[in-house]
Length: 272
Ligand code: C2E
Ligand code: MG
Ligand code: MG
Ligand code: MG
Image (tube, rainbow, N blue to C red; front, side):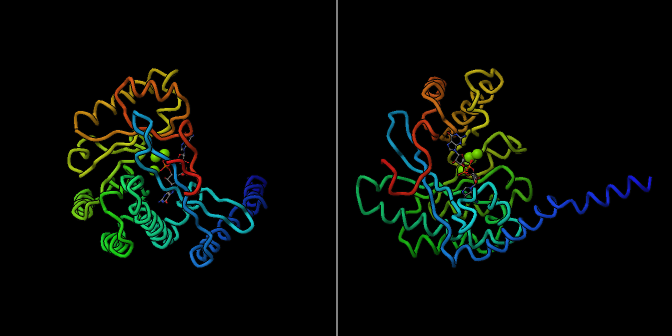
């Protein structure tokens, strides 16, 4: 018994585990300076319609860490959420995307493009979020109709009434909403009729094996049918092959995003 306890105690001081804790703490400390040190950049990935025209982009943040290289948002966004840094990080993304919209608005060929901005649950719930978006729109002169906020089902887990109200306020500004990673969360279908949504975004995990896996195919078909019957737009993410795109098209999904069309990149690399 004592021996086992001793082993566990030793395991507690496992150097790799300790390293992981320090690493996280260090990363979080670094994250605190990310705005002032100008280490964030915004990548964009095109969204394409059935004709192959680019109709918009999704903004995807990157952290260019001075010693670690590029840190994925899959790593640092959850960290920012937990450490109350999502406000400044999300604010920077919103500001940068809206500036881009205002710039595109000056050219008739790019004016119709929309930008989808991911909004974390803790960012959306922050006091003053609606006012923040309103201020950024006013300051940058971006057309609110071109701004699409991507929210996830996890946002809907608590206090649906409050979330709805906030979404309505943003919608009154002209902002639109997409439900990101649809199907991966726990949201009830009843939410869909209450929320002021414009678009469902089919998660890439269903798209990936849609040609081989009948269950994924059934799920994707169902989401497309659901979107159509609720009169919502539907877009598929993670479209990696022409076969994916053709399958989705045949099933009635007319908007696509994925490596088949383009990888996320800096604005200069976009072919619009
Ligand atoms: P997401 O919003 O679902 O974004 C789609 C992710 O799939 C992006 O990963 C994108 O690069 C990747 N992707 C695009 N096309 C393909 C494809 O064909 N195949 C595969 N396998 N992947 C593809 P990324 O950029 O690493 O972002 C990961 C997640 O981090 C995003 O998932 C989003 O939840 C979050 N995120 C990114 N930028 C922001 C941001 O500015 N704010 C917030 N709150 N979250 C963000
Ligand atoms: Mg997204
Ligand atoms: Mg997504
Ligand atoms: Mg996703």
